[in-house]
Picture (tube, chains in turn brown, purple):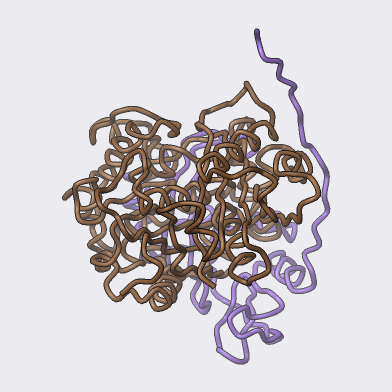
Length: 385
Length: 151
């Protein structure tokens, strides 16, 4: 069964959306997605809902937010750390791909802005017996990657800074993006060191907001819109729990495995040539570089050149994160769904910061202190090749 | 109209069981020993020890003592204060101990941490380090205070 995205809605992402409560944000995103698809809530047969509970200080936010998704509908809750949003998308996709439903909506809400400090929450995701005492959070593990990569491949602080310059430049074109500022390489290098070698302008913000994506079965998709975004292939992967079990932080091996699986299923032989645009989950500059390498866009050790040489900028060969990416907007449990929705908009030709003529887009998320990845290829064509 | 906000705290006590394997590891620390387990199938020595090898899905029961010296795989120095986390600056790293096939998360120390570039130079990946033990050990992960550069 072929499945397509027929609607995407998102709220503007801000430090705090004090104007609205949790379900009011869900309501805003759900209505935006329905309007985009030209559908009504009664048309939606089932809902996949995602959030990373502890960030908002609300356990089971699905209780509150399901009220904005239509009462009495089948609903499933998903929570897989940073991958939550994309796993929720894939759960909704699989509802339709299975043939059990024709029209399913993925909804994700997160209010990291209501968490006065996100790092202690992230620390609770770390092993409580051996590892938590060290104060580890997401930024620390990203810094581990940066240290290892820079040492192994002689990457410079400036190489990493270029990723930030590129994402910030793109975010200026996206009205939904959270951080909007024009930054130079010097601005990035002169911002304060948070966890060495990463500096403040190399780290994502904490964002409030919500997103919704509507999936339709093959026949229905064409009736709903002329330009649906077909889900060509998707996959997820898990890695070890303990960080130390992964002895190289300079490469992202689990992502490389997932990427090969995805591209085989999608019929993609050369990602750099066959994919027109990528929305990667890179809340920290170094991660875009590792992701480009793991996914085969760059040779090992060469990803560091991409932003600096313009390859990943809008007019480069592999425009990456035209939305401004996770570096500029991170409502953690909704972030993956935003990647997925933005990738869909690109192949629909409707993105705010559109890559001209994009036909094939890649969407990615990672979660759980580097443990999980989710990937999907979306296209204006039902099948590649 | 000023939107009202209500402050909420989560301060909930939990007690996490360490299980038998980790308990044995912590008892080892008390005696100044670092214990791991060998997976009978893949042969890897896993430190810290756990009851099953997640790669092979087999139980682990062969205990081995590993060295308190090893090699730095990666590190970071934190300069920002996060609620409830250690006071900055503090350096954490992953150290692969001699005799182990996995790395262990730990503090790095014994040097001035104010300049991160110097810390990264001193502890750059590949650097040999040694555990600095607490004098009064209690059978906790913090019995190893930190790892210092090995001269």
